[in-house]
Structure formats: C-alpha cells, structure tokens
Image 1 (cartoon, one colour):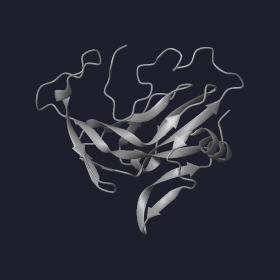
Image 2: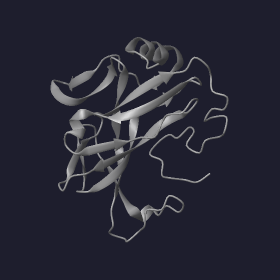
Image 3: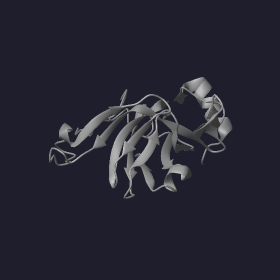
Length: 191
C-alpha cells in the first residue's frame, strides 16, 4: 500500500526515513519561486544537490558499466539556486540533498516532477530497496535539442513509499548491496 504524508512524517521523525526533512511542500525561498520540494500528499519531493557529473564525448570515452571511464564526464559544482546546464541530448549524474533510511518492510520508487518532464527532462532512479541507506545518485536526461537548466537545491523528483504487511526475507543490507551507505554522487560499480 502506498504511504501517506502522515506515515512519511512519522517515519522521518522517529526513524530518520528522510534527512533533512521538510514538513511542507516548499514553493518559494526568501520570496523567490523554487521548483517545489518537501512533503506532499502521498510522497516526498526530493532536491538535487550541488554536484553534477555531466557526460561528454570530448575524450572519446565509452560508457561501460563494467569498466567505467571517468573521462566520460566533467565535474560541475554550483551553489543552491544556480543552474547546471545539461547539453542537448545528453545526461548528467547528480546526488540528492536528502539522505534515506528505508525500513525492512518498505520499497520506495522515484518518478520525475511534471515541471521538468514538460521541458523534456527525464529523471531516472532505481528502486530504494528494503534496508537501503544513503544519498541517492540521480540520472537526469535532457531529451531536447537545447541545453537544459537544472536548479541546484530545488525539487527534481518525487519518492513514493510502499509498505508490505511483512518484512522481506533478504534485504539490500543483508546481501551487502554495493551502493549501501553511499554518501555522495556514486559512479557505477560491479560487485
């Protein structure tokens, strides 16, 4: 069953489900409009952090999940509210501001926000598995023929939480998942 704002609030207060946690949906900061983030009716709108890895073909690197070449991207760091521009028909990796601690009987998934989707920007995050902890690494695709602006420190996607009536037999933590406990933007790795 999908979980409501009451459940998300309680779990964040009592079990550090989301840290830092914004009690309400924030739509402005110091009187200026922002892409919303924080608690919503049946989910939580997460923020993109300040560090980006924008993919480039300048060095002729191949994107290979078994042998990732760091020359495939350039590092960009921007302050909150500033823009990271993703080139046309390209993508970037980023991290969330929020850290997550998923309970053993919960699975979370993430979907893009409509504000970005209407601009041709697609967000992809794999499921947050039971007992996974860490900062999310987010893939942001610019499907347009134009550069795309991503605002650091503002909303990017929404996490939905699904609670089972029983705990899983083997959690992500139990099997020593390779992305357990990640603290920042994490590149692909094997085993």
